[in-house]
Length: 239
Figure 1 (tube, rainbow, N blue to C red):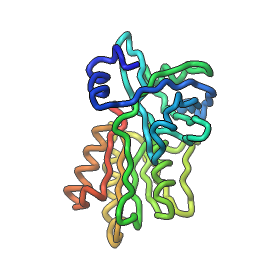
Figure 2 (cartoon, rainbow, N blue to C red; figure 1 turned 60 degrees about the vertical axis):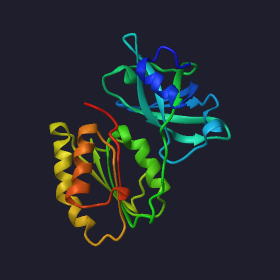
Figure 3 (cartoon, rainbow, N blue to C red; figure 1 turned 90 degrees about the vertical axis):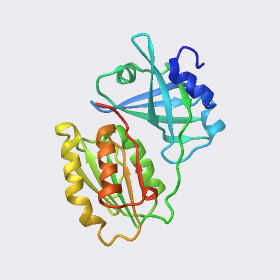
């Protein structure tokens, strides 16, 4: 594995990335635009271990050219070597593959760059911004941070998506996607400062489209003055 992947594959190989082949064992349409696939891991979990928000790079064919996209593991089971991946469906080769995938199909994957550091001190309140593409990572994050209360701005509505939020600890604020993410930025800018006031150890986690993520991360760090170790921001997709 790893041949014919262009410069991305070459760079990952130099970084000692590990390659695996996953096999589809089950499929489920959670909603018309959100699909869950279950896999055997090809030895992944035994080789790498598991941590919160762990992700892998899947390799797709895009009109004859290699294309990689990152996806967060859902319910990884090292003992049985299984996990699931969830796909927010839209246009593109990754979604096309996920729509058509059936038990027995295989896909190559690379693991490199994934990691998770528990915030220290532990958050007194989590402020998260996400969307369907980052929902698996959001679910994993909230589980990893345990009893901390959280406020979540979620772009795109809930639409029967598989949230693992706890209504007793987590407040979910759904935000329609408008103006390429600008509406989400306005909502967070309008609501976050008051919520931060008086919070002793906040932790801000931002994972939506790349441009929106950058805008919100700059706002939180520069205008609200949160130190970088209390902010995690990663763009999950490009419009």
